[in-house]
Image (cartoon, rainbow, N blue to C red):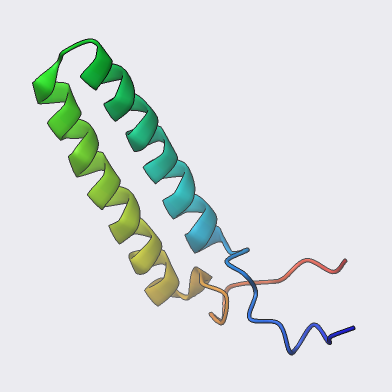
Length: 76
């Protein structure tokens, strides 16, 4: 068994969850808009995908990442 201090966190942070949810919505919408042949909205979903990645990075830099001071890991 490993200690909680040995584990890197596996991305269980507000920054990671926010980024993943935004990017999952972007991929889902992009797929739907591609199927419906709406190219402008497909490109808008690409922009949303980039926004999701940037939001994770910004939140991690703001301290909500795995090793950030504002991140409080759950006790299992």
